[in-house]
Length: 207
Image (cartoon, rainbow, N blue to C red; front, side, top):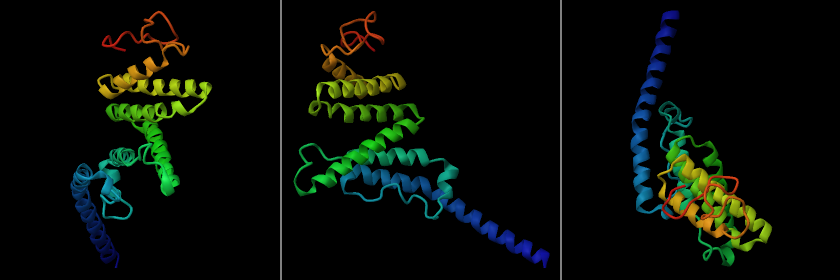
């Protein structure tokens, strides 16, 4: 009886391992398929990168360590679906504002968790963009606070991945917007001897 039970257990285990192997082999293809769907029409898709594993507990995703990759893709997809300011109006305004707010939260949270330098820089840059877009509708105090936060995100993005062109361009724009506001260290022409942080230099001189 013991031998029969052990043999049965081995058969079950072998079947489970075979199923896991098949699932693991299919995961990269499913990710690539959703990447293609996203590239073709990101705004028309539903549930991208949510079913790359056909097993309910998704062990293949953990074994292949693709959780961070999928989370990053989902956040970028959420950003692509954020409505513009002109679109946030009419009867759907609360829904659209909620979608935008959720995307902002997801970008911020993912930026804090992301370990890959290129992706982290991109998320920090996006976070800075969202903050920078809000500054015009606030009082002087909140305007300066948000501007500091935006500059901080752009500067962090450049520090994490210096070759990110969007972060570098946005940092220069934000720093020039801060010129004359009295924010310490945010005058692009101040040079390295002024302010609390390294001077930004003139356009083209680096950060």
